[in-house]
Length: 255
Ligand SMILES: Nc1ncnc2c1ncn2[C@@H]1O[C@H](COP(=O)(O)OP(=O)(O)OP(=O)(O)O)[C@@H](O)[C@H]1O
Ligand SMILES: [Mg+2]
Image (cartoon, rainbow, N blue to C red; front, side, top):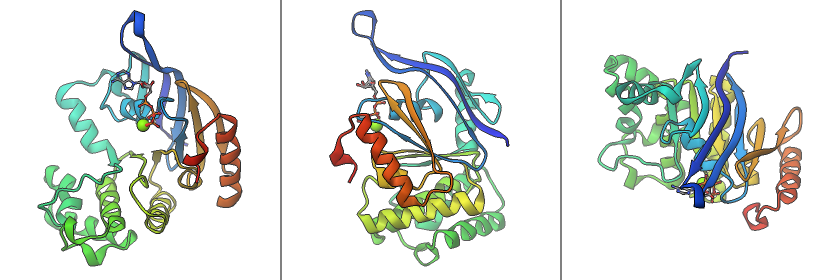
């Protein structure tokens, strides 16, 4: 199996000597092509910091992060923005759709920027829209869509350019339970049918139970790891809750 992501001994410190926060304290793990990995941990444990370092939004203090064999901690300027645009897909909590563009235009944007041929763009947009069941909203603007539809349009946009790695930060954070399920079913489909490699940060055990493997972080370190194996989602969910309880997580976050 090919390693898509290889995180080696990374540290991220904030502040100075007298008020130093070790947000990430020597973290190492790797993600193989086609994996769907969840990152969980209590508030302040370093989840967002980890995602931001992997997504090149933030810089590590030390250590290395390889994506597709390339050390992204040394990329700068134009190379960095090209890498981010071509190799990564993002699914954010607040969708980040452009209000003045239709769903179709929002999804096509990454390919338009790459100056792809319009016929290829149309083919790719339609293919992902069919997978995510949003063909009927392609001509709508974001204000004309439901929250769940917007989130699925945002997911389509994250993967239309076939990135090496899709990064999701609390993707269900703003959704009701029905929309959350629909989005998670879609993300699961992308992983199973299109072999998309996904790394998802979440507080929520139900959301996490869709992943195939979970890394739990606490105080900037890896605390535990769970593999779904042949468990049903419900069985996996119960195991996740056990670890969350063990970590002293906020139980209200679990529901
Ligand atoms: N810009 C910053 N300056 C100083 N400290 C920071 C900064 N960003 C994060 N931290 C600290 O780093 C630690 C990890 O923060 P991080 O945002 O990664 O947590 P998290 O696991 O995403 O938490 P949450 O679940 O609440 O979103 C926290 O102690 C936080 O206070
Ligand atoms: Mg966070």
